Length: 93
Image (cartoon, rainbow, N blue to C red; front, side, top):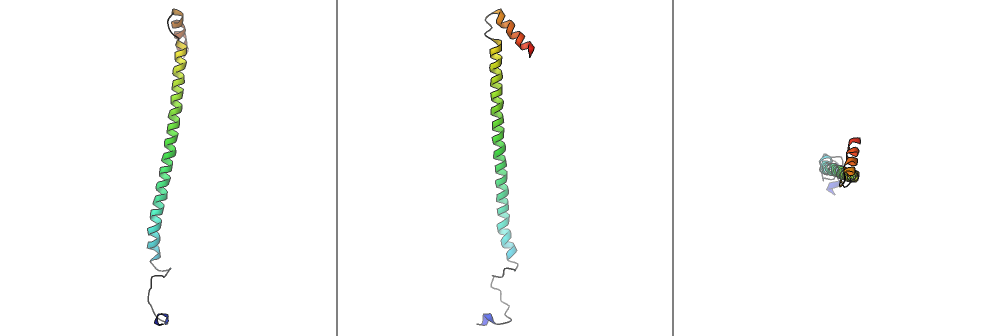
């Protein structure tokens, strides 16, 4: 019954307005914010890497198409006519 007496100044650690609230929040919020920031950075890196991969695949497809087009334009070169046609195609570009 003495704990309910008026004028007692004992601290039991459950005072929500005391100084113990700030360090406790900081111990939770700082790692939480760091985790969110790290997750955001990893996500951005993943999206950019995926975009770079798609761009490189597109460039590779364009390069292969251009090579195929050049091979078709230059022909077999078994005759003088094929060589002349290849030179004409090359000079147009």
